Length: 410
Ligand SMILES: *Cc1c(COP(=O)(O)O)cnc(C)c1O
Image 1 (tube, rainbow, N blue to C red):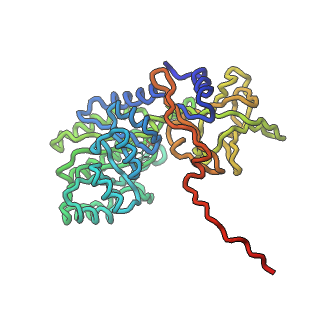
Image 2 (image 1 turned 90 degrees about the vertical axis):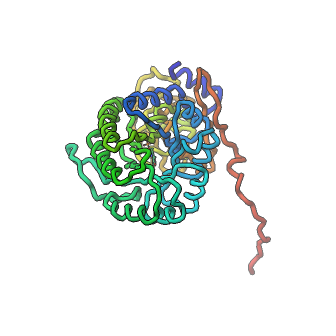
Image 3 (image 1 turned 45 degrees about the vertical axis):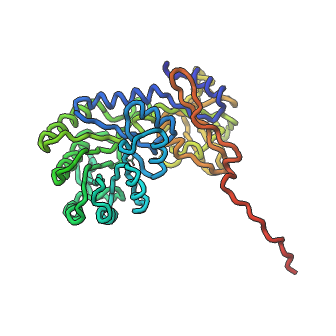
């Protein structure tokens, strides 16, 4: 059953608001779309990026589809293990974490991915027999008119491709075993030629390692956030990269596993955030709709200037007017400025689209507000997968000390 306004209203009625709702079917559709685009590759592994939406029930849903996991902290690894993933199905791609944490994760049997030479050398010297993947920064960026350039932008991620000789020396000196090569530039794949160019750099790098098992192309799949938004053409990428990948494997002499680690692509569009309008406030130039939420629940518009489409679930056919939708946090807290939305009355329920990725997982208790509940719409039924927080959650770890009686100064 497709997700619609009626279902969302029913779920808000049942579970209260503000509320996060995730449509399991959409996650499944996206997963299958990616799988299908790369069906010509003999061994494909999709590792869902846990940080996008880390609810254990969502991880279980992805496990059922055959997914592995991409994790960035030991806590995400632990969530994956709780969801029933085998350690071999988890890759750990941290940035700037301690050697101790990396060793702890390696001891669990999880695939380690190292992104700097210092830790690589220390880890390799101590644990030469543990297979390690290396994260490369290919420094590829799209120039104007889709020129491709090997830029010099500094990024804290990955080992620079220009440091390959140093990297090879470390591997040789420590005798460590490199079983994977990885890149994740973090930018959106909008120009497939640019992506393929970066892939060539990865293939060139791969030839230096004889015992590879996989090549990991990270993520960067862009999904539409508004109508006619430009997004990654997954079919075209699949067609072009698969062909090139298969010829590389023939050259290398082994069918290496092709890995991706999408977050946004799998869960962004599956998410709906529902909030109630507390107040409609007309000022001289603007009509504000103030909702019972804020950037403590959904920070992307404030943090990145992200666009989230907003619908009025309570009055979908109403005449459109311009509104600035704002939150209740005592700071600038704007979800949208001067947006056309069907006429809003106090008490109406608004729905924020694309609320699956980097929304709940970035939420906080700022202003001492509780986090919303999360519901998974699965097999035609809403399942509560995270309870709404209560005041107890706000004070849970606070330690209230006794103060000395105040002395009166004369
Ligand atoms: C965040 C992250 C991803 C997922 O990125 P999306 O844009 O959500 O697909 C993949 N790999 C790594 C290493 C990441 O840090």
